[in-house]
Length: 163
Figure 1 (cartoon, rainbow, N blue to C red):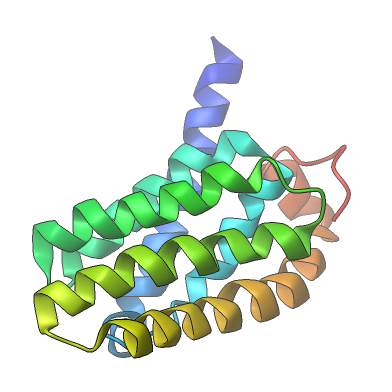
Figure 2 (figure 1 turned 60 degrees about the vertical axis):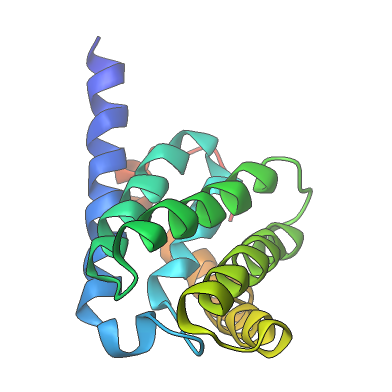
C-alpha cells in the first residue's frame, strides 16, 4: 500500500515538473519548430518504466495549453506515450532517446500537417529535430548529471539504476 502511494507521488511529481517546464516555456513548446525542454525527462522511462504514467500525464497536462487543444491532447500524448513505451526495449540511453524522436516526428508531423496545413515532410523533420535537441542531446547530457545526485536518485527511487 505504502509503495503504491510512493509510486503515485513520484509520478505526480514528474508530471508536474514536466508540464510546468513546457507551459513555462510555451513560446518554444508548441508549433512546427518546437523544443520542449522537459522532453529530456522522457529518458527517465529508460531507467524506470514505472515513471511512464507520470511522464504521459505531464504531457497530457501540458497539451492543455496547446493551440490545437483536444487534438494535441490526444495525438501529442499518444506520440509521447509510444516513445516512452518503446524505450523499454532499448539497450542504451542513446537508442532510447531516439524513440520520442521517431514517434513525435511522425505523429506530431501528421497532426501539424492536418491542423495547420503545414508541409508534411519538413514539419516532421522540424519536430524530430526539436526532439533530437531536447531528448537525444540535452537528455543524454543532463539526465546522467541529475541522476548522479543522491537526493534525486532517492526521490525517484533509482538508487540501484546506473545513469
